[in-house]
Image (cartoon, rainbow, N blue to C red):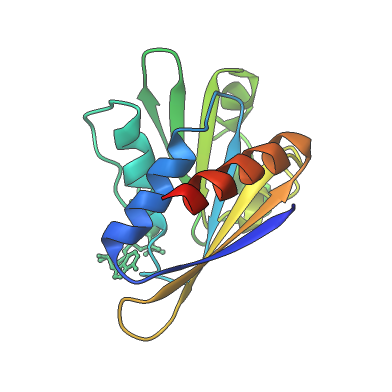
Length: 159
Ligand SMILES: Nc1ncnc2c1ncn2[C@@H]1O[C@H](COP(=O)(O)OP(=O)(O)OP(=O)(O)O)[C@@H](O)[C@H]1O
Ligand SMILES: [Mg+2]
């Protein structure tokens, strides 16, 4: 299974989806968060970081492109590449982060990173519907992401 379409009716429901994803992260994963301003990308990122027992809270911060959150075993990196050009991807710290095998990388507005990052990743697209309704589409690229998505689908069905 390569993609999964979910509907969320509230921030709380989106957080449940995010924490179910967080539980499956073992290090080495790249997650892309796509969708318009105010869709809920950072809501998901915050919840994932929180699930790793990290007290610091990520923000939708365009002033800091890459932030590192040190966990016990896994380091989480949150990047917001809003309006960044592909050629500006260099020397921002991504090279070092991609060498960190225990890292989980969470990228909002990932467009400039599409060619720069490995092709194995989970792409999460949040679409705005009326009111608090959101459509969350998860797409797996590569075997590792496909396996994660399969387990996620089963876990969400059990709830
Ligand atoms: N179903 C929902 N899921 C997620 N967030 C929701 C939902 N319904 C309403 N919201 C609200 O939408 C807002 C989403 O904000 P958030 O900062 O996560 O957006 P974003 O996608 O990161 O935008 P930006 O591109 O500006 O970074 C929050 O205020 C949140 O409470
Ligand atoms: Mg954001």
